[in-house]
Image 1 (cartoon, chains in turn red, cyan):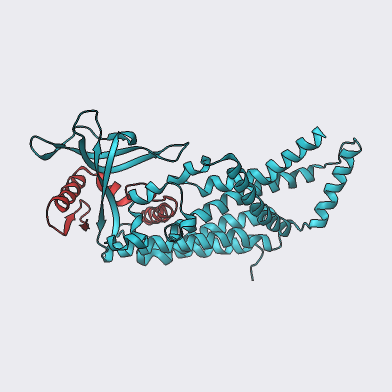
Image 2 (tube, chains in turn red, brown):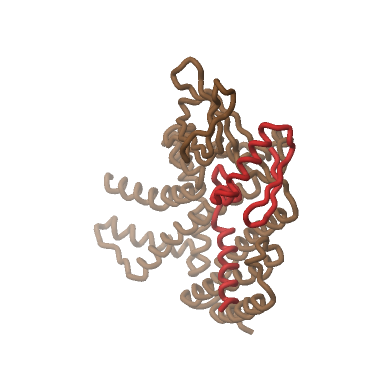
Length: 72
Length: 339
């Protein structure tokens, strides 16, 4: 049963990446970040820092433990 | 004479303009959808007829090969129908004729939809619209708002990674002496249906510049809507994500899936019509073939899967492989190409 769930999710991921076209003025990744309150706060802070300081890049850790490095 | 004019008009509309319109409806999609209704009526009519002719040629080649029609055969049938109408007689149209005619119309619309979508995706995928100005869509704001201008030669130096979001600093005219400065993340924009000009922009996480404290202050609310007519100027600031191994893997996964699924599914859709067999079996073969190809893409793209929770382990991989073999056998059976 667990195998079927994994296969269904993998199939959903493939069909999703094929049919969901990223055409909005905010990328899919940014939308995911903005959907999570904690990640949104971290992201906005990092972008503000890039805007107002001399910092060339900012690294944030998302709630999924994924680390992303931002540049502006 | 009036009757002739009406019949020929209907023929042109149904057989040439309509497929062209369907093609253009699916070519101008997403943020470029409003371009579909833009421009002079004469321009739109001519382009619809042009694309209609192309769709018509492809559909005729496909349909005649699938059902064994020839140009002379069809002409003879049309001649007989015309002769009957000219001599005030009811043309002898059988149920079979009607089925083929409606089938052809359905095929025409389907091919117009497929071609329009493919053209759009090919131009966007290979960024042809960014490199060749002729192919550029009318909504030029989209290229600026999505940071796509970094692919243009003149903005190449801005390219620092994968574009994530766009921050906008806007100077708004509010009727007072001093204009208002607002900053926020761009979430949406609308384009005028009639002129194609920018109408409204939508910001989230918006802040306004305070003249007294000389700092940006948060604007309470979730979404700030600014009509374009109030905007004096706007400054765009892109945020990029540096391309690391994880992101590279994700991009590779998406591209692999896109290329493999497109070419595979197109082949599965076209190939059966060159094989002998009943139409029902061909259609069943297409359904099973599509699932087979999807399972194949799952296996091939699995090493590039960026999400470890979805990545298939050996047990799940074997299950997918067995399912693939089963669907493949059914596909080959329906297409009548089993050894």
